[in-house]
Length: 69
Image (cartoon, rainbow, N blue to C red; front, side, top):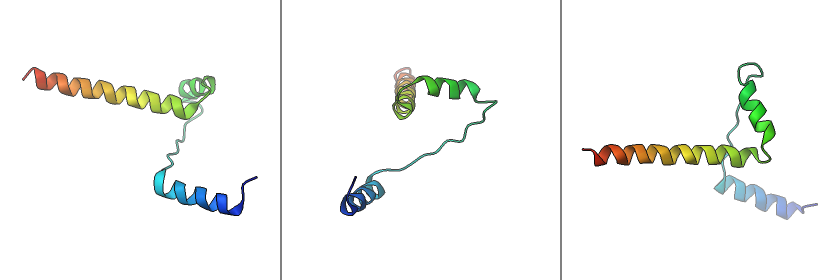
């Protein structure tokens, strides 16, 4: 069990260093997404990995278009 001081410290850290993002998914139209998320052990890690992979692809496309100019 965390002490009150530890809880206050965690709240202070979270306020200064983190941001929460929430998703609302439809049980019918997002069934495939929900099924996949149910399969992975770490939903946060999976989502962050996919976003970072997308960022890398976007950066490659952007640098590729500069090279052809």
